Image 1 (cartoon, one colour):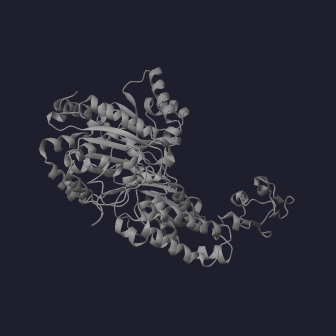
Image 2 (image 1 turned 90 degrees about the vertical axis):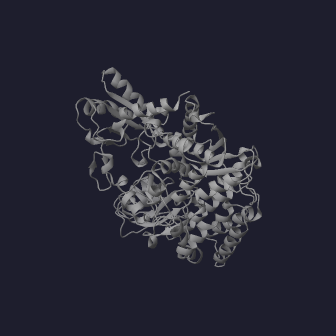
Length: 619
């Protein structure tokens, strides 16, 4: 157990050692080789890269160089990533075989390994992280420590002001002052609904109860979303600290984090962080010499999407099937075991310590009038720079997709972006300059959601997209209420008919009627938002629905049942590439003569379309 004085001494000493992590002018001979150990880079052998670096340094007796595992740097498309500080050299797509060259050339000889330097979207080699366009418009608050510290070393967290906000709260602020600071910051819940965080905390504080709980919702279920996972993997102690601050503010001494079991690295690191905090006396009793006590435990979810809904999550923690409760009463008054409970998601908590240390005025100066601070997005789909981004609220979709994301690959055109996952809606090209904030997205029929942002090019069928998301919610419906259980299934059946060429004109009106009924009558947010992808695609891409129904054609060529793969004899050069690519031998023809496709054999996979160098084949 460490005293407050000992922890402050660790902070002072360790910060001097680690200054080179953030100070590019650090006057030190020491170098730190930072290697991403987030899930993506781990799957691409970053643990082996770390092992190789350490072994090579030992074999060559190289001193003053430390190899550090970190959380996600954000630019997942370029992983595994290695950054060398203090010079901030950014190496991309590093393999275990590259380690010796990096040590010999960069560390020993002092020269950069040019072939491993990251290429920006314009093709130029960039040798420093802060010069990449991907990072220039970002402002990292929730992700501040991700990619900087070793998430499994509590001393490194302490060095970068870790647990300093908790110290400030426990020694110089009342619970009401803490809540007022969070309220004045304008922070809204980052789980999707955007409810004012300070107001939620005040409701929980005012609730009567002999026992209160603080819960972290880390059940991140949206397809393509990995924001919360990356924060837990890269900076687990910031969530522990924030939950403790919340506990002090509302009068709770027990917390639970509910995280899906499919996040093994996040679970392992968070458990280790809990153990370290207990060892240091930060979790437990008489914290920092005060009478405040707090304990924290992990509960694993089995991957049910509905458990992202706060009351279904509570049911699961209590050991029952994850199904939403009727509200009111709300969790602030009757949550875990019917006791007052505060629930926020990972990203919401990740902002708390920064607000306490820097002040509400600082935080509220970022973002827009009604949407303060920053938002973390998992940027994916048809975009060059797939990864994790954090931008001020009010940043436009165009800036995220083209300036940060690097635009659409292969010269294709932007068609739409889906925000909010299965609960959100599509944003078409005409709204590319829409500011990303709660009200602006709602006005165009979408929503912020937890932060998934999927970009689609002009080869994507919007009817098929709506079918995909609706299929997901049908599978994930808990079945408690009829509108969601039956209504979404009927909508899916209509969409399946349309994409198979069996749609009828009245199907569009049926979809709209069903959608509004389900939204109005479902018990929880899953059912209430499930029709959103259908409604938004109908709003902006109704012509595609009409083409599927009336013309029996998929304009994007994605729906196989409506595809008609043909070779244009005037463009075909008879090169034979398409014939060699066809998995079912449906293409015939002599060399240098126009080829033909047998429609009875063709499975409409599109392999020939993608490989034809003369663009002679179309769907």
